Length: 334
Image (spheres, rainbow, N blue to C red):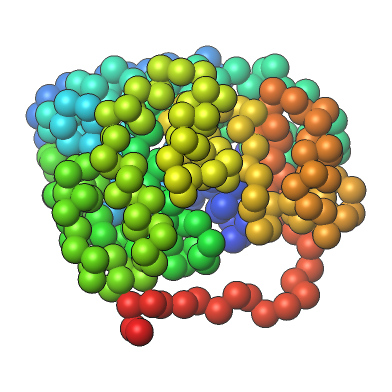
């Protein structure tokens, strides 16, 4: 019942990993080529909350929520590209997959749906956090098992507005990726392979609005893609340490990556422009909080600080705006 009264999506709750997934209407089943797997979660499950952090903007070519209540994802797995369609009916989740990576995706479907996450260990210490948890009973932390597909868009989001980052990801994936296998919705694409990223000309990065610093960081990452993907077998802290060895990847980027690739419940994002002020305002009325204050406020949630921060974002409680929104830049026009 609590989920019926969840607040409507806002810019802040979307950042908290909320994607509106329609309740669904009857439709003819899509042709199945490959494997099908069903999963019965051990508690409430909201596809929009669990898979929402994987979407990079409403025009993300690798992610689509369709009117029939399905979530589609196009991924580049270690064995090749694959398309996954996930739909929930009653207490069961059905996964259908196509392409060379179909079996890999379905094998990891439960973890992607939060089966490795245990929300019962989380104990709210603030009323706003408790209320957000009550309203979002289907929140689980996803674990994709894929590092690069979370790392590259996180690098694109460094030091720019989200709209600029989403535009860059959309343009680069559509131009240099490949069509999603199977009966995927129109214009869905799989992100480029590491070698393809490495061969993108400098002027294409510029046209997408990506400056040389971010482009160079991505180029360094794809050169050691295999080593970075090995980090998925490490714990989240060790994985972050490996990622941060690369110049251009700091605590902000590594945390944003392992939150998705590892389902890291304690990987709180530091170095963010807005998050400290949002957490400070929600928990202590301090809109000018910095990282140190944010970490102090989140200390009671040690081991679950990322989950606490997500619930705060999903609460929609933000300080009133004091200045105009940061203007969107486009270096591609220069």
